[in-house]
Length: 464
Ligand code: HAM
Image (tube, rainbow, N blue to C red; front, side, top):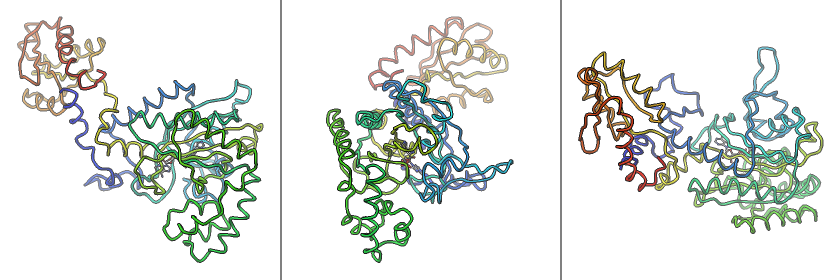
């Protein structure tokens, strides 16, 4: 009961997500920049769950945490992601710093990880280097539901291992991570072959697209010469018939790329990860070769901004950036989209990790009680009891109201009289029953009380 109440108190403001782009009413000039969002403590339960699950699954699969700076030389991204991609060409937060250096806020993790691999001489470390990262990413896109200008990605990279099993392992990590959050995942997968395969295919594709030019949207007309593969990814309805009829990259794969891809699929079968082959899946970043994949939530219509994540192999990138030739693969998941999916889930509670709070609120009356309060709270904290309070309020009624709003199971009440007697009142917030206990015994007494409630708590699935 307590857990139910606690959760409903915490989640009161958490509702349907399409309003997420709108700043709070009366925010005036104090709203965050367009496409950027505050994460308030009311959303903590989602973020805490995601971060904890990410850490646990990465530990379980042997990925070590790493982080690269938010700011890098702009050329790092144009050289790796590709200057004709949307991310680099249109969306980077690009500026000169005070020394006149051209820098950019990271529009993804992979380029920074590759730079770090090279600059830290990680090729001399035992291979493969399996790492995960977690943090804010910046893209100056047109904001809408599921598309922000500052968002967060959780990513995994395996560097120094060209084996279909490595691709499959990466996919299974993301698949299991999403499954553990209660999200039914569709894995879309394709192979775009090696560079030569892709060049041959691109020649064929450009010829075909030129013949259908008049049917394409304005953006895709430009893409024919700049980045023809991206046409395949266009979500505009009028382009759909042209895309469906287009030559398929799978028919242009070399024997070795085809075999490699078949092996990846066999590993996924073995691991019982369901997948759908998507011949038009090409991804929007230039560095990919061979396997590419994306994750969608079951039942969620495929829109440009509905992929929960995506990734693939990038075997040429490290050499291209000046390192030794080293194969690699990885993915990134968009965390705001995962939070949205959890918010909209009726049974999300089952998957959310409890925030640790004992359920105790401490109310005090009078100056002497107030100074004793902090001392007692300090002692309780050392014994693992997390206590909420509001020292600025002096009326008991107000404090009990606040305790209720927090969803407290117990309230400790310390007044002038109790300070003199060396006692304290424990109030059960459900029944309203109160008992007076010795201050020196309050910790063991309250723990006993909490234990009695634990039975209820455990029944409702809490790990408190
Ligand atoms: P990406 O497909 O550009 O891949 O981004 C990965 C995920 O980040 C997307 O599927 C989506 O969930 C989320 N995302 C992207 N843009 C936005 C946005 N504007 N607002 C909210 N969420 C967004 C990469 O970034 C690659 N670096 C992944 C990778 C790692 N490939 C190999 N290793």
